[in-house]
Amino acid sequence: MSESSNTLADVGALVRERGDALRDLVHQQLFEALPPARGIFPEDLSGAHMQLPLATAWALEHSLSDESLSEDVSARVRALGAEHRRHGFPSDTYDSFGEILGNSVAQVVGADLAAERVEAARGVITQICQAMKESASEADLAGIAPAHAAEVASIEQTSQSVAVVHLESPTPIDYTPGQFLPVMLPSQRGSWLKFAPAFPSNQFGQLEFHVSLPNDAVSAAQPGEYWTIGEAMNGFAGLRSGNALDSTLDARRDVLMVALGTGLAPIKALIFQLLEADTQPNVSLIISAQHPDDFYDLATFIRLAQTHQWLSVTLHVEQAVSEALDVADENVIPVALPITSLVSGVGMWWGRTVIIGGDKDDVDPVCAALLSAEADPARIFVATPEGPDHWSEQQPIQEPS
Image 1 (cartoon, one colour):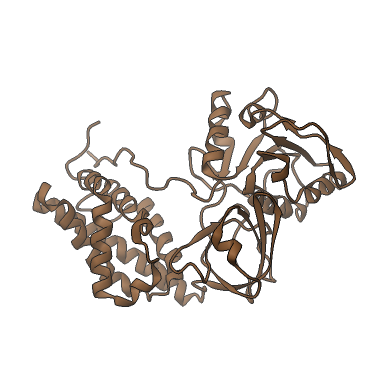
Image 2 (cartoon, rainbow, N blue to C red; image 1 turned 90 degrees about the vertical axis):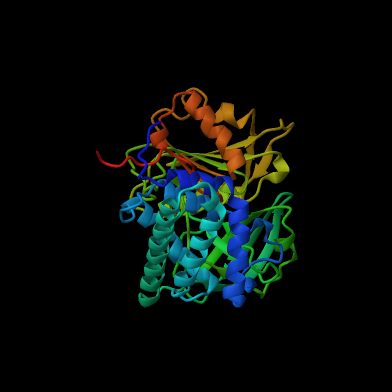
């Protein structure tokens, strides 16, 4: 692979390779320059700022040393600037942070690169932090709340592996079905979990989260406490393109939805949104669990299928069951075979948009099976807490000849 010497891919590669050292330096300098910053991080910093070196490397790999940020780089870092407002620092903090990050990158890579390469990287980092500052400032001026405080109304363990949490915010929280909300519990300073709301965004600020168990923090939570909710992120994204799904869905094209574990939450939000639409596509929903005792909220979907011709529901388990389940006055026998075989089977995905929700470790094998069956990746959309890999190492841009 040839690349122009004017790109900063060489700097980005070293930043990726030495990510842990970069994080340590940034933390050291950040806490010295801004002591209050220590309070937004957990006591154990080993898992903090994990995306920082990856995002920095990606931006450098996709930037030219003597040019302004590309539209793609600018859009992604501006999104980060808006998201990170939840930490509570004013937008002017990015001036100091840009200097800290630039200094840290210089220390980490400076011994192995020419001085002009390091200075070029510092210039790009300055542009990045300026773009993030502008985005945060614009959101502030627009009156967009950096975060919300939502009161826990109830916590219920609905199966052996899932708890359902209901919360209420005094103001509406904006998101689309399939997006995840960063959530900080009062007992978990500086640690942000990601949950997909199971309701569409509503004027009452009501939220429903589905939480995989065990989760010590959520299990110890109590009704009446307040959780901090940040700006929505990610969402149903194209498997290859990363493009967002149009959640209104084209009623002329059938849809296969696959809910893996607590991936039922973003699927539920999407189905509830469809209930309000004038027309709906034909939707085949597969609700998958490891064991029948892991199922939850089944009556909701069985009753919806009973009253809406456009929706059909199939229950799936990895382990065979000896008797039917009694759900909403119906005897339902779950399909027992590998979920990869079921979803990629003959006729299951043909001609359909495929929408999958769940943890990445569960979603990836299903997507791989679909691709092996020659499903069109442009018609596959997934929502995972991890979200699309925005910062993977890719071929750097080429300088125009």
